[in-house]
Each structure stands twice: as C-alpha cells, then as structure tokens.
Length: 290
Image 1 (cartoon, rainbow, N blue to C red):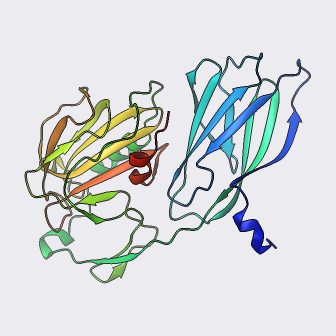
Image 2 (image 1 turned 45 degrees about the vertical axis):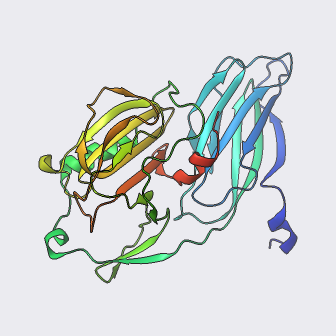
C-alpha cells in the first residue's frame, strides 16, 4: 500500500538500469517532463547518450508495454510523446527505454485530476445525427496519422478569440443519458458566427470534411498534421478557406466559427491529438515542446 508521503514524491523515480546483450558499454539518459503530470497531459520523453557516446538509431520507448514512436530532434537527441487521458486511472506507470544495448526502467506517476460533468440538450433536428461511416473513417485516419517531420515551433496559439465555454475532459449527459467512455476531447471557444478560426501552429492540412458530404456529427471540419503524431482539428465550422495538402502557418485563417454538425450554437471545437489520443490543448498553449 502506498504511504501518504509517496504521493508527493517527484513524478519520475529511477527503478533500475540493466544491460541488454553483450555489446560495448554505452549508457543512455532519460528525461521526462512535466515533472508532475496529471491526467489529460502529454509527457515528453527525451533520450540522449552519455557525453562522448552516440545514439544513431531511434530508441524504443514504451509505457505499460505500449510502444510510442521516438523521433530525432537534434544530434544524439530523441523524443517520444506520451499521451494520457481522463478515462485512465491515475497512479504509477512503468516506462521502459531501450537504446545502445542498454535498457532503462523507470516509473512514472500520473496525478489525479477532477473533471466536471455537463448536460447537453440537442434539438430534435440534431438527435438523429449518428454520423456516417465516411465521416468516422476519415476522422479515425486523421487521429492515427504519424509523420516524421516536425512542423511546429514553440507553443501553439489560441485558434479563436471567443471566450472558453467548455474545457477539456468534461463528462456529459446528452438529452439526459450519460455518455459512457466519453470525455470532451478538446476546448470549445464561443466565438461569434463568422469569426475567424486560425491555425494553431504550422502544419499540413490533411483533412477537409463538409457537412454536405456526410460529416453529420463534426460538421464542417479541418484537420492539420503538425508532425510526429501531433494533430489538431477544428470542427463545427461555418466556412472553410483551406484545401487538403496545403501548408499553413500559425495564425493563418483556415475558416470561420459556425454551428454545423451536432452543435447547439455557434462555437469552435478545437481538438488536440497526440499519437491517437485526445489530450488537453491548454498544456500545448502554455508549454514549449521542443
């Protein structure tokens, strides 16, 4: 049983350093941030060799036995991004990093976080919108996308100037029925209809979906690939002003706020995905993931 004082220990505790194989002795260093993560946040795992050594191939990084891709971000410096979600249990997670014939075994502590509950009442005209296979297939492919080139630089910007109306992680009742295995996968900005929606960072437009073409739930939507498993989505748009395959810069207008799809009024839903999981966009607005 965990003693009370252990809850306040640093988020990362080294458990072991073991050697794999019989190659020359080469050590690896592992740094994880933030130091005290909570549910819904993204963890950055930086892997580097000891001074004088080299790490020329991607290390293997896994949490709870699930492997996450690591990308080279500088000479002898690699990074993996680890998403956490509100549906997970808080507590300890084993982190395993392998590289240069060495294995580092560490333990992460993911802190508890409280998420509020909200009731949503959809009008009769929206209640029968269950989505289409085309819509879900396109969205699933977008969220699963992992490309090697990092396009973003610095914190992500706010995509709309409207007030924040719904935060990340909110649990919901829809028309009085609790939505199991659901959490609000982004931030809602209550911008006025027609107000500009901006790209939050540099990236490539990889999805343009329209309500008229079967996007019944998401409405008019734009998905941007920022590279290395980082995706942003902008849904319920009124108008779309970009095309698939187009590169966009941070702050560039990509559309306008609307109320298309399963929406009760004009707003922008801004979603942020890391390696297929929806994480809190606010962290990426405040923190610089190098």
